[in-house]
Amino acid sequence: MALETPVFGVGPWFEQWSQWHYMAALVFCLVVTAPLEFVIGARVYRRPVRLVTTLLVASTPFVIWDFLAIEAGHWWFSPAYTLGVAIGPFPIEELLFFAVIPIAALVTFEAVTRLRGRRTASSGRAS
Image 1 (tube, rainbow, N blue to C red):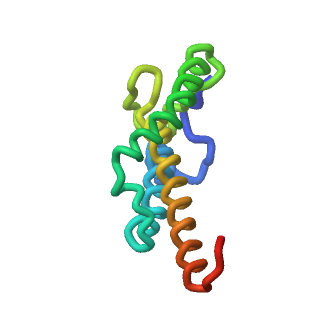
Image 2: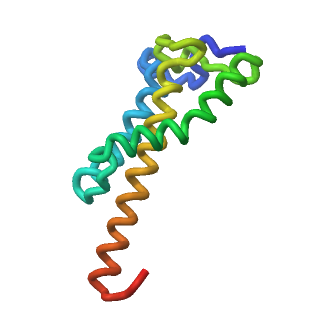
């Protein structure tokens, strides 16, 4: 059922890097949200215990769900788009997904909250 080769047909250069697609998307999410942490001061990375606790609570049900779906044959990962490094049935990219996406969401949420607080404080209005 898994695709053995990429389906895009856009040329050999693109297909040569296809196993990096998933990892590239994860790196992109971190790179795009990094300025929110370091410029706006979202302070997500500066609170590691809170971050790890949040990741464990948020990710655990989805890791279990993924595991059950993989074992039942309902969910699979194309080797054409993953690096081939796995922990159990999970490609490393899938496990990183359960950390990267919540981190990107938390950083975005905290940055927006911080910016709204600044705007509200400068205008003298209560939120």
